[in-house]
Image (cartoon, helix red, strand yellow):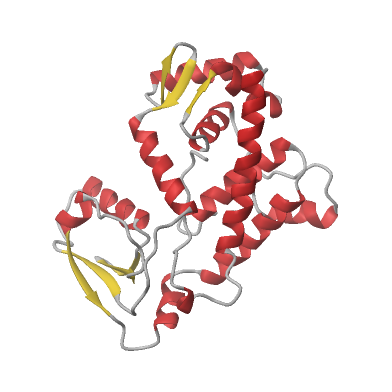
Length: 274
């Protein structure tokens, strides 16, 4: 749903805070601690299209969503024109759709909500960069981004790994630059997982986002919190249950986001019918 990239634990760089309407002091304090990003006209449009299937909507529906945030129709239409010029959107007969680049982002977001997993037998997948030195910066950046998208963690420079419980293809950027191995740690795998990922921090924020979604009433507040929730789900390491702390909140946050998406689809249906 959301168009912003974030850091490894899904928090990103705070650009402001959002406080859901009608909440008490403790709720407001928690919302502020979440550092929710205020949504611009551009991010509202992209968030709406990234969360809609198929990712194509008429301008009038996108304008109505903007109105939820007090953004004028003219401002939304200017954003739409600029996004077409920037190759974020394509326009046809008054409707706007995501371009190929953003369709790939939508696919990553969909995968974060309904991950394809397989039974885990204790194996780990290990990617070792064949030539750690002398690679151009752009090549190193592309590899790092691809490894993060595959939900691998870097143990040390040029060595990436994770439990082999995910079913997804490896893009060419990683198959060409890495040698791939299968193995298992000598020590406790749960200890290694806790070293590679900040599981406590991820779980704390996930629970706070789920509570915020439960408590928010206004559509604009739910939209803002849901955008943060989806960003956070993109950084879920999707580990086997055996390696996770008790009461892991990943599935709960996915359910809360799914409920929001159902409400958003109904809202858009009403806008399209109006």
